[in-house]
Amino acid sequence: MKEVSIRLSTIADVRDFISMATTFAGDIDLVSGRYTVDGKSIMGIFSLDLMSPITARVSGKDAEVLAAKLQERFKV
Image (tube, rainbow, N blue to C red; front, side):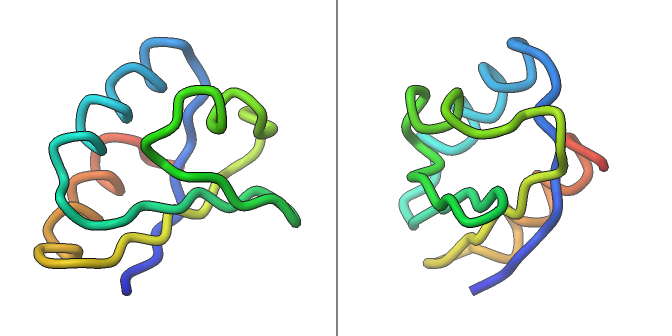
């Protein structure tokens, strides 16, 4: 499992994140405070506090590659 801190501050960011997440075969969890949601769920993402940094927990095959892409695209 790989953890990275990201920021999804606009609707376009959420859309781009969902596009990246749904092509990944592994699991992605987003953690904000005490809440954890499925990173492939748009409803779950919009239930988080998007004004604060979010921790993305990526696990599965090629988790390191996806984590690096997320960190580069959605810099805190």
